[in-house]
Image (cartoon, rainbow, N blue to C red; front, side, top):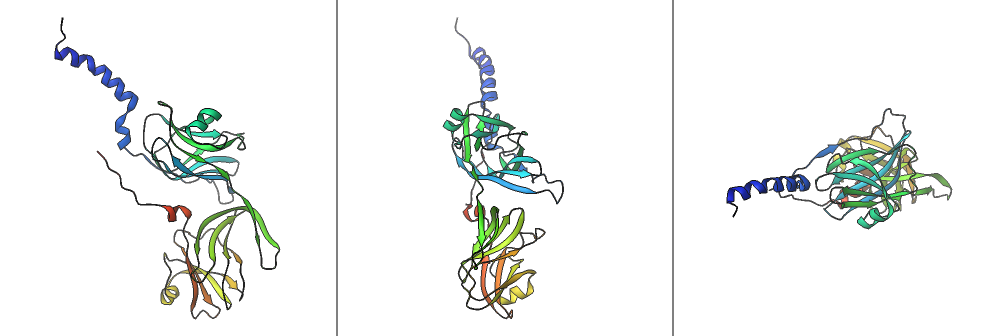
Amino acid sequence: MALNKKTIALAAIPVVAVGWFLFRPELLFINSTVNETLPVSNSNETKQTLKTGEFTSYGHETKGKAEVVRVGEKTYLRLSEFHTSNGPDVHVYLVKGNDGSQAGVDKNGFLDLGTIKGNQGDQNYELPSGTDLKQYGAVAIWCKRFSVNFGGSNLKEVEKTSFRSDAGFTLASYDRIVVTDGKLSNGGKAALVEDGGKRATEFTGLKLDTAGTAFIVELENAPTYSQFLKSKKVKLGEIKSGSKNAKFPTSKDLDIWLYRTIVITDKAGKKILGTAELRSAQERNRKEESFLFA
């Protein structure tokens, strides 16, 4: 006996419902945003970035930065400036070895840090106590339901470097992280760095024919002399004529999202010798994006 259209339609409902539950296509058009800061309980608690890497897209466009950060006695995987597609049953994996691709996850194994908190924004995942970080060198954003890797990041250890003075002796040897940096208009480079838990402003490759004074200024862009005089500023220190390198301690209380400009004046403070706009690597590489929502 032939089935009528009503019977066929009723029979199709469970199939459609199961398909919807498995695929959850509406999630692709719904963003879930997270905005977490690192959980620092007090100002004396030390922060140290151990590994870092940028995301690569695989199954879906994925971008941002992954870091392994130690805060006091706890260690976190931190995703920042992060964006990927939403989807069903998406998890964050810390992957063994140094390959965050689909093949790397399948071959080397992983530590499941749980369901992703949001498909965009800054977020933290605490690592279990005793996790051997020497084994884990990658991150994957993994859809468990379909065994698809949305995107991965290969993590590199933060290099330990030394900063040398003009006299040739080592001033410090710590885990060094560049927070923001920029090229000086008169030659050389300025960088705001974290060095062994302490903040400093470094100058390298300087080209000064006269002695100068370095300032960090609450401005976004290179100022005119009158703008410099009117702006809030912090004196970093004196730079000797002919110096190639200089390094000045810089307070962590300084808001680095407001104080974005380096200015070097002559010693008398009568004219500007050079400026640099401080930006993070992510800011300089960021591209405008547009999203189409159905």
